[in-house]
Amino acid sequence: MASETPSEAKPSQADITVLGQEEVQNATPAPDPAPADVVDPAEAPAPVPAPAPELTSPSIAERVSVPATPPSGDTSEEGGEWDLLSTKVRQWWGEHDLADQWQRLRRPLLITAALIAFILVLRIYGGVLDAIATIPLAPRLFELVGVIYATWFAATRLVRSEERRKIGSGLGDLWSSVRGKSSS
Image 1 (cartoon, rainbow, N blue to C red):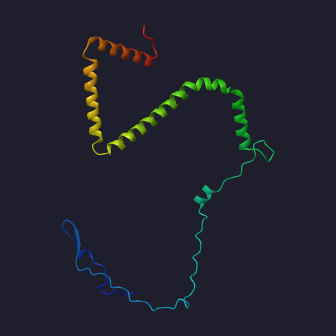
Image 2 (image 1 turned 30 degrees about the vertical axis):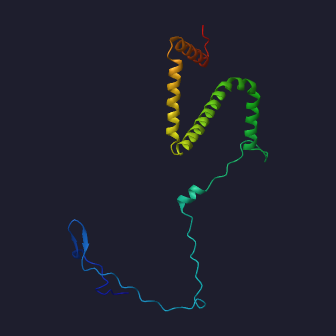
Image 3 (image 1 turned 90 degrees about the horizontal axis):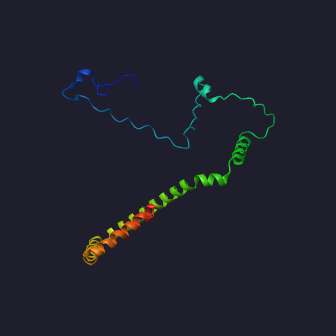
């Protein structure tokens, strides 16, 4: 297509107006190309593979090439990193007494295990409560049962001062046993 027809020409700068946004005037879309002659697939020439791009760019070659390093005083073909690692592990194993390490790390490990167990119990408890909350009327029913029990407990155990003192001393003993201090 050496020459373009006026209908196929691109709109000139004079055809574009700017009024808040650009609008193209007198621009017509390019016509659809005419269909090419139909060629029988058996007679079609085989596609020629494109040549591979050249990968010998100096910047890539610098990054890819790794110079050989001479062995560091070790003339044997075996060994290397595995021997170095196993030597370090044997050395650490010989220097550290595992019973002593267990005594030093016992409390932190038990605390960590207890925290993990506590988190798991809380997650399971939350899942059970979520499952109960999906049952219609169950949360309201449990609230009603709690209010009835609290009212009964207050009416039977908190009216007399002797009963209140007993409950207070029982709670104090429970708190001191949780803290690990004996009550005197």
